[in-house]
Image (cartoon, each protein chain N blue to C red):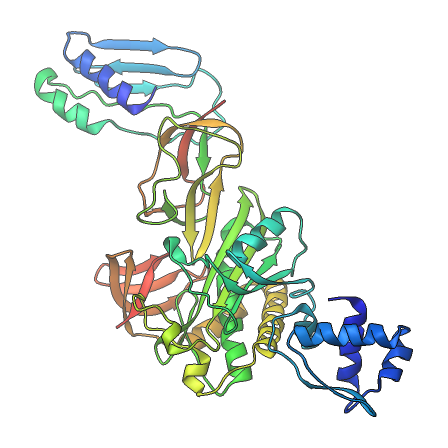
Length: 157
Length: 324
């Protein structure tokens, strides 16, 4: 489930009296609980083999708090990610005025360039190692990235 | 170049003065007519060969063409320049080298071009590459290092360019982080590197170098981000490209061998000596946005820039540096 869908889901739930919501499919399990014991648990339904970054849907939570009184805290299981092989600066496009290499939702082919990570004027074009769909772009353009940081959440096709 | 043409060239270099057509014909085991054809080829390539009927041929001038034959004559390197590819024109030597490396070109292979139509700079910028005057080349390295160590190689080519300038001219250049080479504060060389890596290993690294040797003032574009210069503008005379190219590769070879034996430390030390900016105020920007400003405190073990700013000691991995 991508962030947009998740936001819609949270909004829908906070507009009702539902205090607990659970959804399970082959890829992910989402649990949203509201009320006095506000907590969220995300569990992979399959054994995780990749880094799992946490993501919070803060803007939606803030918007809904006035209505519900309790803030749903949400994180989501990202599944497979493409990680940075070096410490450096993340660039989504080859030049500041150029179009980004990829956008969320895009299907990329094996060998297609996804981004550049630059360190000390060494440009490292990160390529897709297999055909996949971009689920999430985990870093902002020109943001510093550490070794092993997830750059993209992807779905292998 | 045809092997026989190459052999004639070698004979000219070995012997002073005139070489008779008969001697050439005998040594190469070809007819006098064939010799004449090879001489014609050499002349077309820019070699000036005098011919006097009773005495034979004499090589009086060698063109400053970037040919593998001419560069090889000055090479003493073990790895860098093992294979030379000299092109009259290309889009980008970095792109050519990258493609050749993907196809399995050996470590040390170097691509030269007389001119580039799309010489690359940082952030999609262009490196102006007019024909006949400068040096544009890209070196393929296959170091057995982890990808996160590869940025250290950036400092090798910067030091190699600085050494080559010192060995071939009276000019003492300075280096600006990470690898711009400056003369009197003006940019004389731009270096851009590319890498192919996987999470657990480095496939290859391309060291791209553009050096302004003989570019004239009117060949620089008017909208440059930094003031720039060429060795010729600084010296008031032209610099021969071939010996410079070979000196550069020889020095890069020394530095690379040292890097493989002793690691980053010796290169880092020489870089810091040449940088000559300790304690000086500088700004770092990304595009038009200033990231930080403060006093220069050298580079760390990864080659990251250390800046003492109001926020404390900052570690910078990319950006445009200006010394104030």
